[in-house]
Image 1: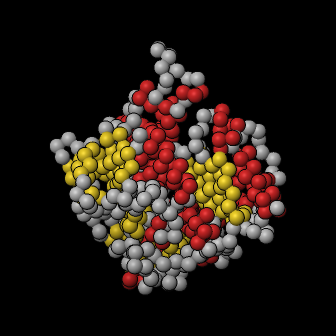
Image 2: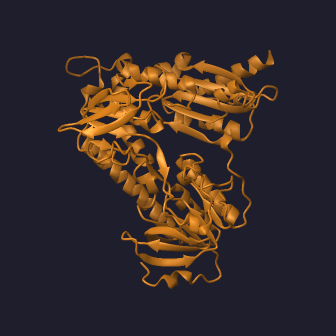
Image 3: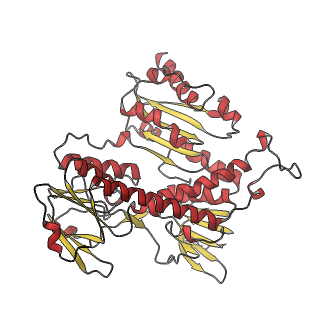
Length: 481
């Protein structure tokens, strides 16, 4: 750690790029800038990889991977699998989950991924400083230690802000990391919650409700909406809700949590109507708040939205020349893939390279529930509201031979095509591994392929991708009639 801040100002002839935040937006930007020959300084206080690697995406999907194995066991009756001792039908309870071992693996994988990122940055020649970065002006940054003392400062030709977000909490439901938890605190639990109350039915809440039910916990999901996953494809949300019911998840629709408190051996979540739900643990999955407080935005003149997010354009520029922003702190999409793309776009633009702006219609995303839900492009709601013109075709997976072989009980593919040109403009996949299956449709949306071109692509038989081509074939025939 440099003791003299002035050492960081010895730039030579290379442009100085300073990046505050080491998550996907930050480290991808750093690697891109280094490839362009810039002198790159990356400042991170919580560990390289940010929340995506250390407390969010990598840990949650690792936990979900374990839950998927148990879910496959509990639904394998139709495949002829029986208990070896008494030939009884398999259930998730046939196996025991060692949550301490699961969480240890989660933490190990997250740490290993963080170390891999550090090696990549070292090899690229990026200087990494452990500390909290803050703007002193439009072209000057300081680094603070844990006590808030300045340990370094430097000038920069380009600054990228990639500080992420933190979990939103209720003042009446303070998270203690033991019984009342946010999503960053789940991986220290030594034993499986007997009854987990999940407050919030967005992506995070739905994913953990699905995972912990598969692991063997009793789960109650508190949803303020009529249906889980508000804002997601309604048909997909209905499939998931039906899957929740079949698997024994209790969904409290049109309910809002007012408070949560610890008891001697558990928690009580109080709803706004006075109803109390008793459980062993509560997970507050209420979204995120951008980490933009005390970042020096006002001093630098960076415009901020009412939500606290940094205002950016499609090439990640803020309102101040030379200052860019990427990731959850911008409020564009709370996706690691989007953060990484924003970071790369910012550096290409800042360093004078040709750049294509971020196009929202080409962003694909997935929800890692059971079954998974993946979407890209225009939604059916966009078509119904008149925001976009499109024709919608849905094909269930119940006739797909691979789905039958694997015992898949629910799922569908939905294709949205523009009338006239037959260009694919949107899609939804609900199935096991939908996060992998969405790629062909994402390619179609990005490269403006037609339904006929998708339908004319050979697929493996038997495969779930066969249904991706089949729905396009049916869509093309319908549009021709």
